[in-house]
Length: 541
Image (tube, rainbow, N blue to C red):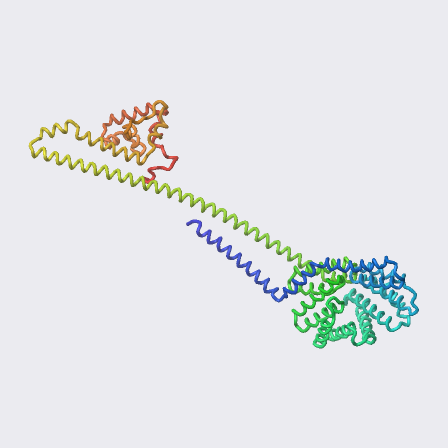
């Protein structure tokens, strides 16, 4: 009964703890319920395979490098160098610069001058990607002074557009140069819209991007969706259109569409080993705002690692703007999770210790109950034997008394008083009764103390131990000391019970003391027998 209130307290603690944990889990689930888990799961799978996609691209580039070693014509060598520079541009800016410079040095004879201009523009693009803007601007200005043919002008404005977009991303709208770079970027778009044919996919994208910048959401959405349908998923146009469509969906309130298209654009970049993509960092920033810190942290770190590995300096700078807030929030979330885990551990440990203590106490109580049950069962049987022996003794004496009464009545009625006196004086009648009486007494003692002979012998000298005769239950000495064990220590009371004289009882007791190992304490030692074991007469207490 003492442990019941404590047990209720423990149960209440567990319920309160579980309720708190469930509430926290429910809050987290409600907060992240709007996140398109399926889309993010697919993006995570693509990220996990990024190395294999890069390996495919590297193999393609290596195949181009092998062509350089085959000793082709100068014109073919130049074309391969330009192709390698273009392949490297979005994957490794330094390698792109290296091969673009080699292309500049390897320009074959070209009366139109287009190949040299194309080589210079390839180098400008590579330098811009690496964030090396000063030589890129210088080379671009040099080319702008040349009267370019139409094909070269298209390449010029494309290179200019890339350079100013990187410069605009680098300053991040935080300086007075942002408006200048944005204006030049728009001028590049205007020039390309005039030069490119209507059906050109890049021109269609520029027109759709212009609609996005002008906040013409519905019209931009329809054109961007058309671009996605008409261009292969592995193309750069597809990735850029998906990013712009994400912006449109966000402004139209379609957050699922926003996340989906950012993920599509990011997957496109990863599959093509484009390490300058902005879709993944943008998605990471949105997830951070939505409380999905784990995915936000993983995405921003992956994007930063990609930009660093490709030495895409301008993208590293823009990603770094997102990084501190996400990193701090993620680490704070980890600390909070660690603190929560520590609290869970402490509570779990406490509950475990309490459970162990309660279990140990329960086991102990069960064992005690079993022991007490066995003792109670043995005591019950002993009590039944004790009562049975007592009833048998009383019944025997009642029967003997009835027979004696009938005998006395018969002798008196027959005038045989002298015979009656002689019978009584001979002691034959009482002797038979005493034998039966002692037999019943001995049986009762052995029912209560079945090993009384062994116990008393343990107190006697080796050569003085008790040895019973065949068919002999107990001897008078043992019978007397059985009553000593039962707490009847006075010889007069024992004599009265056993129908002995006091001197007889005293003589028997003195005889047993003389046989004892410790004569002076023999009586007290007998009285303490079985005290360290299960007391066979504990029911008398």
